[in-house]
Image (cartoon, rainbow, N blue to C red; front, side, top):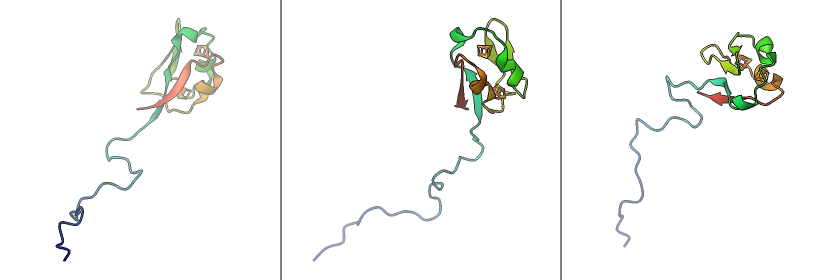
Length: 89
Ligand code: SF4
Ligand code: SF4
């Protein structure tokens, strides 16, 4: 006879994992632009003009205030030198 050894895993009802794709509460991902290749910045200022949040300043090279950045990607598209990348924080 097949003595029923514990046939597999039993799940405790009650607290399962969150559904796939659900973000953990309180940890919202947000897209922001970062200066990924500062060495390629020619300080042309084009990105400053297109940023709707005034998040970019250019001195020697572009800098982004991540608190202001909305992740709209305008600077990523605008920069002729591929200085910016979008990332998630
Ligand atoms: S992604 Fe948009 S808001 Fe953020 S720095 Fe670039 S242009 Fe500004
Ligand atoms: S558009 Fe690109 S090269 Fe021009 S200032 Fe901005 S980051 Fe630098």
